[in-house]
Amino acid sequence: MRELSEIRVEIDEIDNQMLDLFKRRMDCAKEVGCYKKEKGLPILNRQREDEILADVQEKGGAYGTAARMLFADIMELSRALQYNIIGSGQALREEILHAREMPPTDGITVAYQGIKGANSFEAAQALFPDAVLSERKTFEDVFDAVDRDEAAFGVLPVENSTAGSVSAVYDLILKHRFYIVGALDRRIEHCLAGLRQSTLEDIEIVWSHPQALSQCAHYLEQRRLTAVSKANTAVAARDVAREKRLNVAAICTPGAAKEYGLRILDTGLQDDPFNTTRFIVISKQLIISEDANKISLCFSLPHVKGSLYNLLCRFNSLGLNLTKIESRPAKGRDFEYLFYLDFTGSVRSDNVIDLLSRLGEELPEFSFLGNYRE
Image (cartoon, rainbow, N blue to C red; front, top):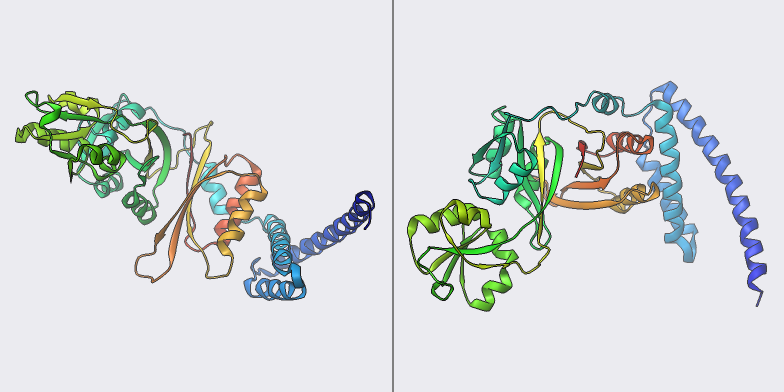
């Protein structure tokens, strides 16, 4: 058996040879890019790439899968070089260049789902303390209000640290493709609120939003309480106050309990003491602040083996941290999916804008949803 030092010497020699060959290959890729620019040819030739990768995997023997991954990365780097040569993504670059800063928000109308005292109301109040807050019955109503210019912005919950994604909102994001221009992570404190004459021992039935009920599942099970879904937590509190049943309480925020004149019977009901909900701000106008640090995209993927893996590798190669990926069924297309993706970054970075430009050229149904501060 050879000494480790001897093996490392050989590895260094091979690496130097590989580096020289890589530089030669990239020079060839540059020539190809110039040729395609002159002839008006597309950069991506998926059929040729698939044929090459299949051949590499076969010839790679025991290392076939690893060889395929290596060559896929080299092809991505070659394509990136060629996209830069042809100046890809010009429309997206222009759109980002002309993005607005957040305007003054005093007196503007902001839509939210629910009624006064709901978690979305409190999030909207925190994000827009000087705005006119406009309640809407459903999540879709919030999107419609923004679409019809009845509200400049909409505030919506998208994810909870305990109950997970709010699927209905992601469906609407993918449907409308409005911009996301802000976000807020808000700690959610749930209390049990009943009539002023009620005691904790009286309560048999609890009303609340399904997400809140899910976040307090252990508490409900432990006390053997019957859970009933309501449109949101504040609606639950309002209805408890209206119906005046001693054995019914709402899971809601302390603010909602106060708003509807209820007595707080218990606090800290959530299973996770750090229970947090992420809210987003939607707009028809692209607004990018100087300190924007998160980017959202949506797209579909071609039916090609390893397409999702290859996409994720492209973010990894640039050191970009993915914070969310959500897939939703594409309406009217069996077993096809749309993807929503968040990652940390700024479009003011050349690497990031170049990547977005390439993705916009290659991915079906690609939309840049915004770069904002969270």
